[in-house]
Amino acid sequence: MFFFDKINLSSFIAALLVLLGLILINEITRRNKWISISVYIIMPIILTMTVWPKTAGAGTSSGYWFAWVKTYSALIGVIGFMALRYIKKLENNKFMLLFPGLILSINILEAVYRDFECFSKTGIIENGLYMLGGPWNIINGIAGIINILTITGWGYIRISRNKSKDMVWADQLWFWILAYGIWNISYCYNAISDRSFYAGFILILSCVIAEFFVKKGIWLQHRAQTLAIYTMFTLTFPSFASNSIFAVKSSHKPEALLLLSILALTMNVSVLIYEIYTIKNNKLNPFKNEIYTKLKSYKKNLKQNKL
Image 1: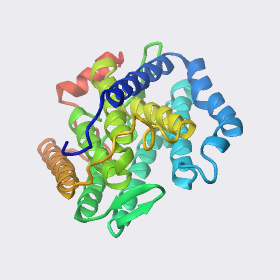
Image 2 (image 1 turned 90 degrees about the vertical axis):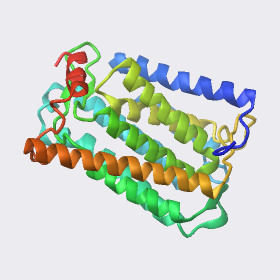
Image 3 (image 1 turned 180 degrees about the vertical axis):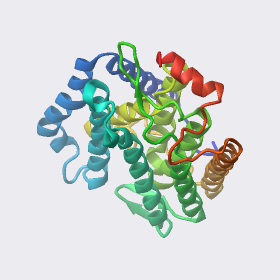
Image 4 (image 1 turned 90 degrees about the horizontal axis):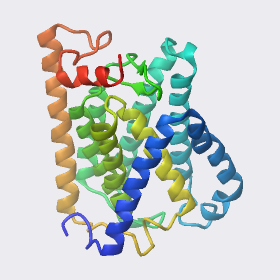
């Protein structure tokens, strides 16, 4: 295969189960506050004290700082979003309304830094992963910076008026979501190549399906929860995506790396051009206005969340 080694039946079934599991757990926790508290607060505390020191401690395949930081940063995001959703007085708090965009930008910026860092890591093994740096790292890093610049609707987070009290970001539309998705898959393919099938492709697919086919307008909430679920899973079973019978290895083809990064850059530049066009055409201030309020997809986001 072009991007990955051959995907056998066991890996295909495992990938399907992971995908369905992420979507299902995300949906269950989305609908119930107390289940969310149990999964994203109580369970991580228990796992931190009992399981993770054994499965992801020093000397294990996940026993390095990045895996831990990624898990806890994802959980912090989810918990912050839960506070915004469930604590009524925070709905109009200016800092809390900026928090989702801020943590999203920081998360992207961390990946951009790592992409640039990987540029010089060619043909070496780092943390058990084969690194193949090249121009694709720079190209994709630039795509990530553009992805941050094209985030719109800062501070316009709303809480849905239905039972689930979802965190609605109506201005975060399908074209930005797809541009982010390709960029993130490319980043994973660059930086954690032999784990990128699950951590990149399957993980991104889970939140895209949740956004497009389950509940619209809350992509960042879907993204944060599926990421937290997956990172907790990988700390508990660190060899699943890299050394088990279900692992899917990267092809490590320079052509594949370059193609993904160019696609990520092209998509993000396209979103930037469209955003600039929309701002100029409608005489908007991107620091004060939502940008895409006239689009049907924006209106659908509000309608589905009873706003």
